[in-house]
Image (cartoon, rainbow over all chains, first blue to last red):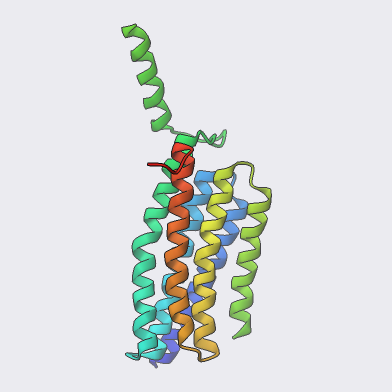
Amino acid sequence: MISSIGWIIIWIGVFFDLLGAIGLVRFPDVYNRLQASTKCVTLGTFGIMIGIFLLKGFTPMGIKALICGAFLLLTSPVAAHALMKGSLHFGTKMWKGSVVDKYGEDKLGGEQIEKKEK
Amino acid sequence: MSIIISILAIGGFLCLYRIYRGPSISDRAVGVDIMGILFVGITALSALFYDLPYLIDLSITLALFSFIGTLALAKYLEKRSLDD
């Protein structure tokens, strides 16, 4: 029973991994790509780790898989956030169909205020 | 068994396509990050399928190095240098 649940979770994880990779290719913009692929791939690989833990139980391999999953769950959003901030500072352009750009508005407003003060 | 690893390898090739075609350096950084996490999954599944428990240690190390590499790339994008 637990083995069947483990295999099902591994298959769900692999499916989400493939969805993340397809999103990395198909989306039009670097921010959309980060949004799609980072979440999907993190969830997918975490699912694979949970599946290995369910298959192996409380053996050293299962515990290490659980630790690796927890590590991924902690570090992957941090890396995605750092990449997003780096892209914004680098000046990567958004897709032309983007609706809202609060960061750019703030930057532009700051420049206008500085010009008025001068 | 081999179907699962084949699906993950297809995902890796899609990441390689994005690294090759990416218009800016940010797209390439995203592709490298995603490919690193996919490789963590491939390594862990290899440890499960071929019954080699030490490959799990390799997957933990790979996740660590992928994280540090992505942070270095983000720092480089932000400040154009790795000094501070």
